[in-house]
Each structure stands twice: as structure tokens, then as C-alpha cells.
Figure 1 (cartoon, rainbow, N blue to C red):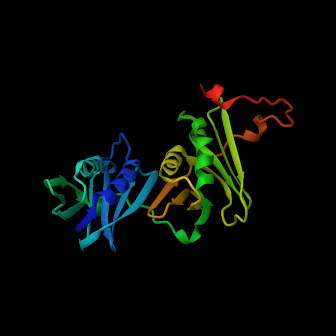
Figure 2 (cartoon, one colour):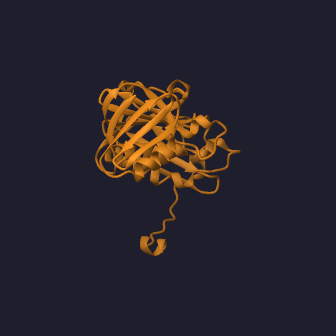
Length: 264
């Protein structure tokens, strides 16, 4: 494998992959990321066996191939590299990185030994407004529970139908519910419980604005397509608590407060 890529384009994609790498693991290979050449691109993959990410950065490919390398080490090295192009070449499970300031070598693992990354059928994706999605995540995810004895609460409940998206999160003490109406929204329906990790990643990586992202609800997984980055995650098995039962109906008590005073 041999390719050349600019620091400007490569570093953000390495940092995206680093967000999936577990901080602690009994499987050393999960501390690595996967580098593989593609047509005019370098494919960067990472997984913790629950969440996976595949990103692409433009590159000039001289020789096809792949290698698994320590994620933090290569990201730190590229971060500290001077601006400009960086040349990577792999041989005998070692990655040589050539910069204008010198040559560095990193030990790696054969690409075949890296856990298989899920490949999504993006023909099934449904486009969702990115601003709506980010807003929904940010206004509910703070209430997700960290109590591992209640796994259903370790994620957010996401419901989608033809004209509405709804997300709910609770830790048993507080509950956040956010719903947004959508026009001409078809193809994505169902109820799923989405782990906090992928919600955090999506919220961080999706640019605010009027763009769109692709979403797929599978039987056991969810896929979010951001264009040059695709994130997938296993879903949490339910059932989710009946949140509607704890929200008062026909409540005539309302309180209007100054947002600035409340947050200060």
C-alpha cells in the first residue's frame, strides 16, 4: 500500500475515527483503525464492535493495499505534521510515514485481522434534515442514563413515521421529549432505541444547516450516512418505558421564565 494525502483533508477523518475507539478494551486490535486504499481515496475505518465508522479522504494512490495501525499514534503524528502532503507506504506490516521533517515508522497488523466493518446498503436510506436531527439529539440526549443495569435507558427512543420524528430520553428521574413535524417524509418508520455513543458522534459531526443526512433503520442496527462518513451502530433491545404515562395530560399549569435568568 502506498498513497499520498494532504494533512488538511486526512486529519479530520482520522479524528472522526478516533471518536469510536474505546478508551479501554481487552482486545488490542480495537485500539487500531483500518487504512485501505480505494479509487482516488483512502478508507479509514474503526469499530468498538457496537459502533463502527467508515470515512474517506481524497488521496493519490500509488499501490493498493491495507493495514491496521494504532489509532491514537497515527492521529497524533498527523496532527503534529507540518502542513502539506504526507506519503504513507506499508510493507511487512509496518507503515512508513514520510514528512518534510523526517520519516516515521509505525508497527501495524494485517488488514485481514481487523474486525469486519459493516457495509450498509445506502439505497435504502431516507434523507433527514440535518438541523432537525441535531436539534432533536441535543435537546434529549442529556437525559440518557449511564446505569448499565437498565440497558434500555442507555440510549434514546427514536420514533419515525410519515410526518413526524420523535426522540425521548430518560434516566428514571428526568425525561426529555422532542418531536418535530416533517413534510413529505416517507420511507423511514418504526421505533428504535439508539445508543448514546452514535448520537454523540452524529451530533458532533453533522454540520448545522439545511443539509440532509441519510438514515436507515434496520432490524438490529441503525446507519447514518453523512456523505464521506458512514456511522453504524447496534440498536439497544427494548422495551422502552411507557414515557407517555408519566407526562401529565390536560395540564393547565404553565410557567414562563426568562431563559437568561434561568441559565445564569
